[in-house]
Amino acid sequence: MLPEDFHLEKRFYYNRLDKHERELYEFWLEALLDGHQTIIFRLFRDFNAFPDEHPIEAPEFFIEEHGGRHIDCFKVYNSMLWDCPELYFVYHYDPDYKISGYLCLGGGDEDYSPEEIKEINAWLDEFLHKFDHITDPFQLELAVHDYITEHYDYDYVGGEERENEENYHTRKFYEKFTVTGLFYNGVAVCGGLIKLIQFVLQRRGLEVADIIADAGQEDNRGLHSWLAVKLGGNYYHLDLTYDEGDTEDRDCPQYTHFNITDEEICDDHFFTHEDYPEIVCNATEYNYYHKMGLYFEDPEKITEAFSRYIDSMQSLEDHGRFYFRTPTSLPLGTVKRALSRSITGRGFKDHSVDYLENEGYYAIEINGKDYE
Image 1 (cartoon, one colour):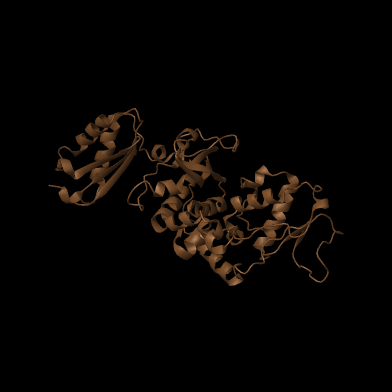
Image 2 (tube, helix red, strand yellow):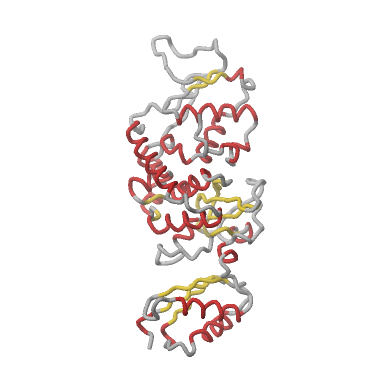
């Protein structure tokens, strides 16, 4: 039986499958979570392709009883991996037809031991309950995003290693793409970073999709994964990896990829509705800057908000950072003048405030030691 908070009916790739594929998905998923590391499906009960002297004892799924021979087992297998961060221990499996009519998973020397799985699951459970006190879905997403950004890093070495095909299908290699990279090493590539936030959001009943497509600039693009999170009936793109890399201070992301639209994600990601027709991101209500009241079209609102931020600082000798966003059509000079109106009369020197701007995203650095 699956945990009560598993919410399988809300998992994105599960809902893309037909009835028979879902039956195989459910069978494999429950068997794996029950501790079986070898699973077989057979065409029909009387078909026995394995030699009698080499019997395999494992859960079996009979194709003839679930829609005939037309189940795409690899589609089902990948759907489970994309949907279920809980299946971190099968990423290094090399699913293969061993003998016609069978698919075997697991059985390798690098399988996680029951003790390791118990330890990792306990860590996941502890991580999940860190956020029990947060009931608002947006605030939950934000809290988990910020915790991961503050406590874990992108695995730049791992990103280079994935170009080496000799590493494929080893546990060490695939840990970078799962929650175990964070558990063991405190680092992971994009897939591992998003799996931890995906785990929490799904267990709390949110609908989340693991998006897999190219990202980067046209001359330097590569395979990447991020999330689409459903809030208030609409999907939003969330790329924690890009948020973590937006500022030199990785513990303080600039939220440029926190609940953004299709149009915005396509500035540096190659997302298409042809691949994901179910995911349409055109709302802004739960965009970080809109939701936090930090999106300004009126310069006067910038002055008011920055003044409130300065006044809220415990000491003007502290270092501070103020984030906000404007339409790209609002000139930089206009924004600077709006900020200057807040600074004037508060004792700051001109050089005590730095203006960092990137396509309408602003990070204003207050250097408190320069305060008069």
